[in-house]
Image (cartoon, rainbow, N blue to C red; front, side, top):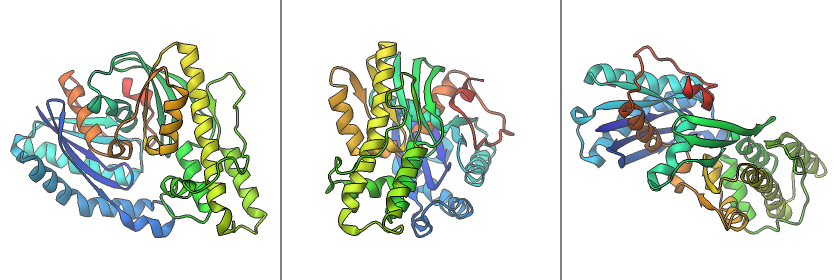
Length: 334
């Protein structure tokens, strides 16, 4: 079976083909024009998806040496994400589904992140814990089986990825914030400044990053909103440390409570090297799996991969399927 996946939830225009559980092509066209705005502009993202989707699909087909008539089904992200961006991808996928007379399957973006580790670790077995950490989500899930998920912990307010992006703005860094803070942190002293670790001593599995952002704002106000260049690396490293320590503290608590020692981490923040290094130290006696960097950020490989699994299990979407900007992982089970 050849399943073509389409991903347009934010600012990455991505198309991939999964053939019998193997990714044979995965193309991502990154939209570079958002950095000047300091973040993603939804209308601009939608228009760029319209411009890039057809050429991205053609490149994907050429790369895989599979023709469009050999595609057996279309998988497309239906949420969560930006309304206009999702609509562009779903409309494109619907056109392909009707034109090629093949099934359409709507995919939950967060569920795809959860399953992205199966692409590179086919021996991964249930149950396992999953830390989903991105610009819009910071959650810990107990994954008992396929579509049998229990939410163990969530954020009270902001997601870790959002804390990175807004922190970067306060530091005067460009977008995307997580990458820029990581770059600055490499030459910094992470113990130079102490930023708050909300809920760190709580025995509840929950996160909070709004106070951390406020703390960085107050710190910047000491310098009239412009932190001196000679200390930015130390500030960035200390701020990053607070985010990473908060994540791993609660992940360790989840492991202790569930006694599950297989852990997978997914989402854009999973690409952070400090998070990866500290995880290997703290969980040295556990099996911890990170997807490769290209599978951490938004991509269509995970959409095609999960789409194929769903179709083989008998799932199928109606051609009238909509988009759901605030889709939750548990919504996938309904």
